[in-house]
Image 1 (cartoon, rainbow, N blue to C red):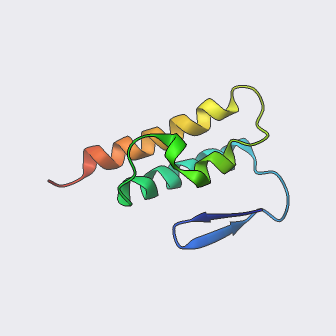
Image 2: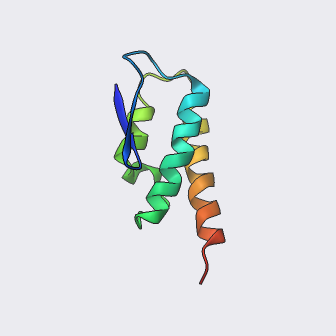
Length: 80
């Protein structure tokens, strides 16, 4: 599976990403979404939605929280 984060494609080699890999990727995606002007709505990020496939019960919320946390931190740290 290939997942585009920033300008790079991440190859998982066909294996399933671990929970911590998904959370790290979601964090990068949240920052990227903010930088690209996407509202703080995880559903609008197609790459994030790909991370939510075939998760164990409860894992999806941790992934979405990482995305929202990253987006929010970027928003709060922006220079006005």
